[in-house]
Structure formats: structure tokens, C-alpha cells
Image 1 (cartoon, rainbow over the protein chains, first blue to last red):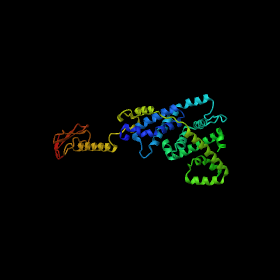
Image 2 (image 1 turned 60 degrees about the vertical axis):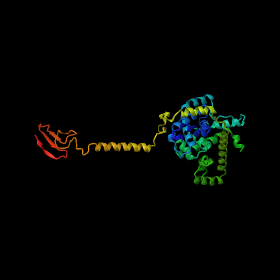
Image 3 (image 1 turned 90 degrees about the vertical axis):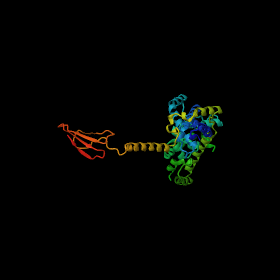
Image 4 (image 1 turned 45 degrees about the vertical axis):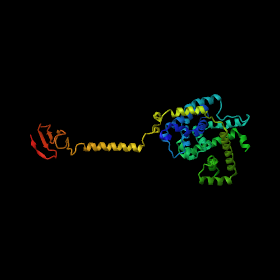
Length: 176
Length: 173
């Protein structure tokens, strides 16, 4: 109905995805406020671009594509600002003290901060493939690149994550 | 498969993203190589911990008020108010094939009108023929058409008259 121009049908259409789109935006940007802005813009653009929606594709993945594009644009805008903040903090993004108390929350926060050590493209493929569990083909469609490129970035990203987890959280490996 | 090759494929193998043929070769190697098996298990454990952390991580969510306000702003009234940013995102009132058919029919009618607006129309202007300065003119309503040739060198003027069926009527000087 919304494809036929009925705007009141848009909300029921996107409501099931309001959480997943915001979560994706947050995982890509690692900033709650920016994630909100990204998700809002994604829904605005989704409404305006419904005519371009390919009904043969999952609607969720189409929303993810819009949100990922928006997040990439935002990250590009804030890249200098973030770099400056990291420099001011005096350490790399994955600098977690292994001797610090490892309650679950700290551990989660530490593990998720490893995403910041990845390049934007690596982060996108890891979030979409490993966290959102899209397959390689859908990931490539969402990101607008080839499946080969997705495999290359995924391979690099997983290797980086594996190395960082072993470096910063050696007890996880010992405990397995 | 060598250990070097297995090491290269390890990250994709850890997420079951190898093609079936490569996965078989990789599994065969890992089954026979304790070092690579240990490396694979370590990588899987690390990625597993990362995924678990992501699942348990608190992600932001909308309050009902925020969501309602967002939907009102997103839909922003009637679909006619959608801006042109999305280009083809605006819905056409008709399907494209219908618009194209209508345009084609209109063009066809224009062509037919041009061809048949004067039944049995005679040429109104003739430019063919030898010599410089050839000119032709005929009022639309006349049955007689004249063709005039003026020589730029000698000033000689020759006029031909035709009836509407282009029968030759004579020469006047």
C-alpha cells in the first residue's frame, strides 16, 4: 500500500525494523547520538525512495543498505574529529587494560570497542556478516561491492579481531 | 593444502565462508595438522566471544514518543510532498508503460496530422532544379504553382507554371 503512495502504511511497514536499523547504525558508528541521527535519516530516505525498492529483495536488507550508506557518510564527516579524540585519549581504540576488573559489562564494552580498530569497510562487513548474519551475497548487495571484495575485507577484519582479542583478552583463550 | 595456504584461508573458514571445494580441502588439512587446528580453534573462540559480546551489548532503542515523532516527520503529510531527492523515489500517478504509450500515441497523431492536414497536398515550395537562384512559391489555396529561376549572371528570369497535378502549362519570359 505504501508503495502505491499511502504514507499511513509506512509506519506498520518499518516498525518491525526500528530496533535492528538503530542497532546497526550504533554498531557502525559506535556513538548513540550519531546512531540515532543515522537511523532517522535512513527512515526518511527509505520513505522518499520507496519507488526504488526492489520487491525481490528482503525489505530489512534494503533498509540496512540505506542505513549503512548513511553511517558511512557520517563517519566520513567525523573521521578527523574522532581521530583527534583518540589522540587526546592517548591510546589506540583497543587499549583495554587486561588487569582491570573483568566483569561482564567491561568485557563486553572492551570487546565491542575492538570494532573501532577496524577500517570502516571492515567494520561494515563484520557487522553485516557476523553480527546481522547476512550471507556474503546480501552483504555485497547492501554495501554495493563485489562478493570477492566482501571476502577480502571479512578475512582481514576477522584476522584483526582475532589478534586483538588474543592480545587484549588472553584469559578468554585460556578459559576456552 | 599447505599450512601457509590454510593460514590464509583461516578467517573465512572460521566463519564457514569458504566455497564447498575449498572448505573440503581446508578441513582435510586441519584434520591432519594440529598446529592449524589449534589456530582455527583459537580464532573461532575469539570471534565467538566477540559475537556473544555484540548480542549482549545494550543497543539504543527508540521511545514510543520518539518513534511516533520520527514517523510523522518521515511521512511528512501526503506523498505528493515528497521531495525530489530520491529521484525515481517519487511515485508516478500512472505506470511508466502507460505514460510511454500515451506519449507514443500523441507523437503518432502529430505525424499523421502533418502528413494529411491538406488532402492531396501539393508541394508548396520547390527548390530542386538546375541553376542558381531557383525559387518557388505557391499559395496554399491556389491550384497553380509557379517556379521561377533567376540567373545571377545574366539576370534572365524564367517562370514555369504547373497545375496542382504538376502538368506543364508553358513557359513565359
